[in-house]
Amino acid sequence: MDTIIDRAGLDDADALAAVAAATFPLACPPGSTPADEAAFIAANLSTDRFLDYLADPARVVIKAVHDGQIVGYALLNMMEPADPTVAAVITERPVTEVSKMYVLPGQHGNGVAGALMRTALDAARDSGSVAVWLGVNQHNARAQRFYGKHGFEVAGTKTFTVGAQLHHDYVMRHRF
Image 1: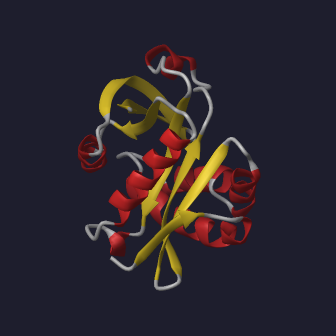
Image 2: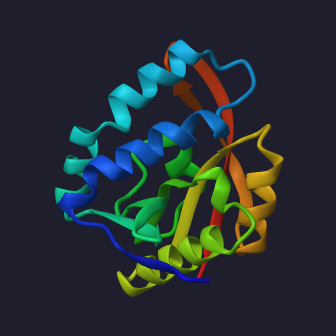
């Protein structure tokens, strides 16, 4: 694999936002509307939001670069869960959330996502976290299998809002 996995910087914000806009709709739950997906992207995955994430010392953005282009990313939140439903089932401290992890479709199956996840887990462990958690839509069996291969297990459930729609996620946990 000639893909480089590295920490993203402020100059990557535009490219990260472009990858996010291309990949987020692919992982959306059934019933998501293009308008709801666009509203979520505008609110959470814009260049300005990535600039905020990249400047926040409690967050780490990891990028996958192939042939000079960003083809995937992972966003880590190295803080306690803000959602009380998640905090009730993810009790380990300190803990890291894999908030976002996406790879462009042309990179599926070639090891990029696995390399991103291994790097994300290493970053969490290196920061002192004793566990990592993430939310994944209950209908996204492919992602659930991927996370399971990386040591994640279902710990509970939570809701996730995309635009005006409420969806149901599994909360998955990986312990070190």
